[in-house]
Image (cartoon, rainbow, N blue to C red):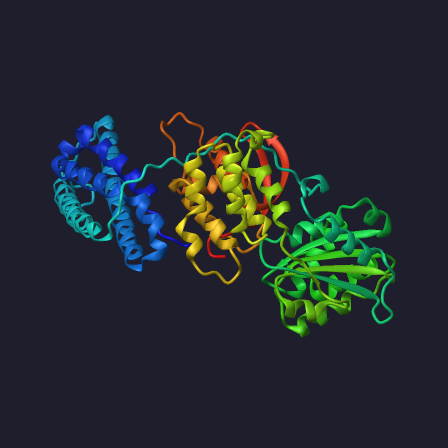
Length: 500
């Protein structure tokens, strides 16, 4: 989803230009007329930006055009920042009553030189923007209104998966439980159960269901949960396993020292270890870790969740458990839960008919169903539902059924500012845990939050962004930590990232 998002920065630049045009600064620096022309041109372009951003996935030339516009907007923002800084400098000098008898003409603080340079920079931006405005006519773009705003938060998230919140996985849970609670096979001290399925199917959710079951608590004396992800590094895995077992993080120890710490933890325990989201296909790396995990009480078990059949064949000691998609009926139950307020679906049978067609496009993938259901939440407009059903993105080919198509549709319906904030998250490594308050601070520093006046609380706005992205299923594996003045603080360890 690494598209070019320029509408948000264009809106910001327009605001800065309008402020300059309405103040004495523009007149003082002799750029008032040029600034007004920039406003007119950028306003004309901005009217079609939402349509351009939606269509760029089908049109590489349009994506290049948006990229050029984004560069111009950033250059314009830099120039406008220079004007603001220079104006503040002048105000400070005037307040201090400082008179300079000697002034170097080419000094950065020389008003004549600054005015000349400023005029040249703005005229150059105006020229480049005029070319962009002319080129836009070749793309047949239409004006679209941004109706995607951050909505009120009416749902709560929770740290653990509760069985009552998971639909359609009772049989799957029962089968995994039997594998966990039955005696080990005769060849292995530790039985390894691989759960395989495509992204968004619910492998992690199924693993959590059994991990948090009370029967599992009674059967195993030690439970550990590790998110492995892309990097299968022995030292890191040992650190994480020890931390999950005893709550201490030994980052300054060698592998040999970590092995000596782990040995007494496991030696007299019947444990359950979940290795979630494994991608490693190097058998040698797996053997290194496995050899450190088998000195334990027999009937210990390891659950491995992965998208790869090869990973499952390398690690598993029993046949792979292949997780399938939800049935249409179960998908509809999930969809109703996320698309309607409680009981509302009974009042809108026409929407339910359209909803069935939408759900069929999701290929039984609960993540896709949740994302689209959340997108339609509280909307009773039949046209909104039909637009989602008939979206052109469904025509795109995808290697993994329609999960990415569904998420792309949901992504396209985010406001430009939410898109920017979400794309910013791609700087984090896959499955990197971060807390919501720290993320909001990053967004604030980079000027990504939309606010209408300086008195608005940016941290509160940022938390609303976090909650909106959670509601739309872009953040997963969320733990509620505590409530503060800005709302709830969350730890987020998995994101549906733009580059996934």
